[in-house]
Length: 86
Image 1 (spheres, helix red, strand yellow):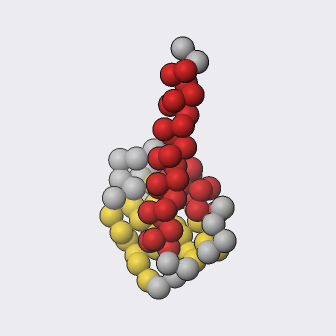
Image 2 (cartoon, one colour):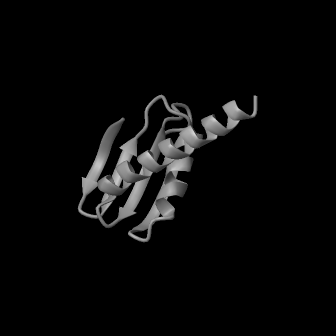
Image 3 (cartoon, rainbow, N blue to C red):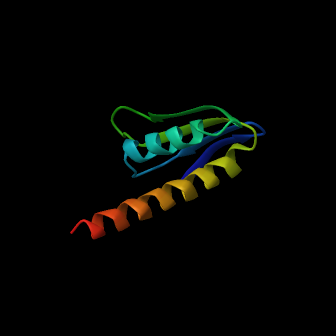
């Protein structure tokens, strides 16, 4: 990951080598937060296809870290449920 732009209430992160689905899941998680006013994932270039996460709101870097932790917890819960279903 590489931070492309970081300002007080604005953050753009290049998620090189990652899937757009992961970036979109992160954006959706961020939008559940009342301190985030905008979150979206787009490709940096049609041929390169690296996702760029754009976040606006109060302390966006901190909120991205919190959203990543929440997604990690959700994935662990899903993994446990799947293992029990075997």
